Length: 327
Image (tube, rainbow, N blue to C red):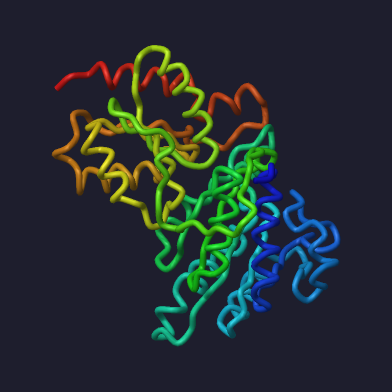
């Protein structure tokens, strides 16, 4: 076991897959000589050269389209978005091309590509750099959407994403890059479509993902002292949702709280509530509760920014109210 920073776990995954498979290459702004905005590709340029660690112009639509074409010919591109919010400029290439070409070509083309990079609400990054694009792409058929949350799952999931024959949107949170964790020295891969039971419990199911996993963890410490026993699930896969794991938990606790950093309207929680109501309505003792960000552009002011997203004390209060409810 070796202690590894989150961004280095991602770097190890890319390095190992590039060494394993010559069809894997990286492209994006400043990924080469500079090593990436968060140093995920640091020093890989010297090891693999400029044709496999490809610095691009500031033209997200162009290099994303080029990556789709490369994937169609059998290569495995990894796009790094300097900030995932910038990839809105490539929405057409991701949705109409990457997501649909395998279908519209009658299966003649596979699109084995990964689009990864930092997103989420940071510390005073302003509205345009605080996007949560997972909700934008949720409705696009043909995409897989993955959100890593620990150095361990970041590495295992990214390796699996690179090997997958479908386009994978791989979301990393900008505030998690300096997390540390002991990682196995031997190779491991993790499934892209499975949620993780972070903490088993019986009182209430708390479903979350990405950075909110740690806000939930803070809330759980308080709740445990008060005698509550919550079950915590990290979704990891946002598309498809792991409804098997969620279903097992709901049948045990009969109460669900969803904690997300995405905005309330059209968020991941909205889709989850619909799916739970469709499949598990009779198992619920109370309506599913969602704790989401406010539907406003994220303020630059730090105090205002904090007020827009879910905080641990709100999670504690929600559990207290829900578990006290008897039907």
